[in-house]
Image 1 (cartoon, one colour):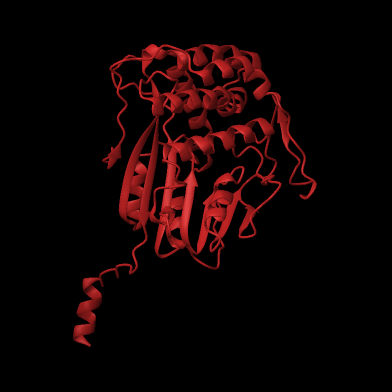
Image 2 (cartoon, one colour):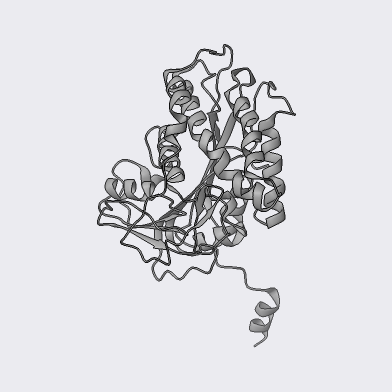
Length: 357
């Protein structure tokens, strides 16, 4: 496993078993929060908006079936909330790479798998001097887009055709969306200007507990194993983030750093910051569980919608269990394309031939 350069530690000396205000609110409002229906957008062509409707959720039509997460309003709300959680995790920053430093001036920026467009639009607002491009399989449905932000519908697994390099490429939670990560990272490298930065964010599905209090037979562990089984059958495996550090080094990046953050599954930590982060994570995962596995379990494993929902009751109970001290590892990997690429050594036989000429 790649060495982690920065890792946070959550003090588990005392567990807070009381319910936070957010958890109390969520327990009474969760049904209303996640029962909104998909909205329509008239500015986009009908062919792009022909979504697949399945098990009460909608999925993208472009490259149908390639990505198992839904694209309805419920998922859009969750993704926007998850964006806020990520920004909170990073102490109010949109990323950790130097382009996010105060006062930095950035030229061309590319947000891969932009989802709702929240990150791209926030970055565009903070950096009016930048040209920000967001790419996804599903169209962005924002009511207002900053003038320096543009969105494109495209498949990032195909060969990229950009004619100008980027100064900063941002990629977040693309685990199950990419089949060939070596190609993905290489295309990022090739499309960066010298000195440009790549920043990857990925979450580890498998729940962790630093003090070993999470049972090996917990439903949340079984959920991950079943999801991995389904993804392996389809060839789209949920990847582990730490090996991305090695892949970035192999692609030619320098100054590569791997950071590990922790999202508590509920408000078990005593520390107020992590208590809030845990309450938000529980709310986020309450919707993410079904969004992540419904298509995979029903399409690949042959489960019914009811079987999935019954199983997820136990998984949610595990996430709420404060005695487990469980959390979701979230990784950030950053790297820079060198200003001058190393010239490959000339083969010895060519050198000898030149000497003999």
